[in-house]
Length: 166
View 1: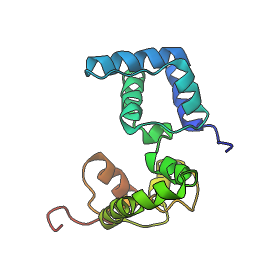
View 2 (view 1 turned 120 degrees about the horizontal axis):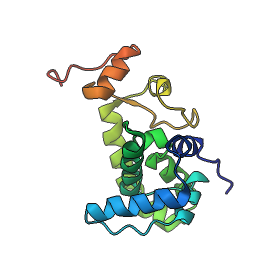
View 3 (view 1 turned 135 degrees about the vertical axis):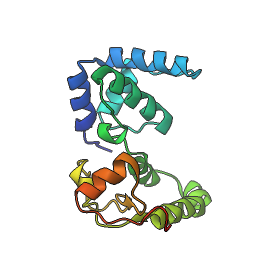
View 4 (view 1 turned 45 degrees about the vertical axis):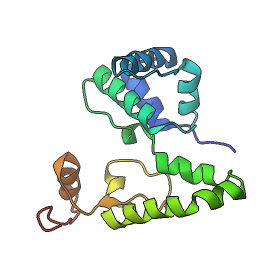
C-alpha cells in the first residue's frame, strides 16, 4: 500500500529544527522520565514521516517533546497523527477472522464516539487541521464545548451543548 507522506509531522519537525535521530532520542528520554521504556529509533521516526501508523501513547510523547522544543502546545493532531485513520487503513488488511472477532467491539466504541460528537462533514475541525479526506466519518466535533477546544470551535461558529445541560 502506497502511503502519503505526513506533511504535518514533517513541517513541525522542520519548525523545531529536529532530525529523526534527535526526535527519537528526545522521545526516549521523555518516556524514561515517565517510567516508560520506549524503543523509538530514527528509522521509526522516518516511517511516521512516511505515513506509517503510531501508537497513541507514542504520539502523545512525540507531541509533548515537540511542544517543549517549540515552546508552544503541539497535539498529536497537529502532527497528523490520528489513530482512527490508521485503524481504517489497517482494517482493510486484516483477515476475516480478526475482522469478525473485533467488529462488534469497534462498532460499540464508534457508537459511543458518535453519541458524544456532532457530524458536520468535518467543517469545524477543517478550520484548524488539514483533513485527510471527505470519506472519514470520524472527523466530528464534541457536542459539549469546553476549554480551549470549545472556545476555538465557538470562535468559528460551532454551536454546542451547554455542559450544565448535558
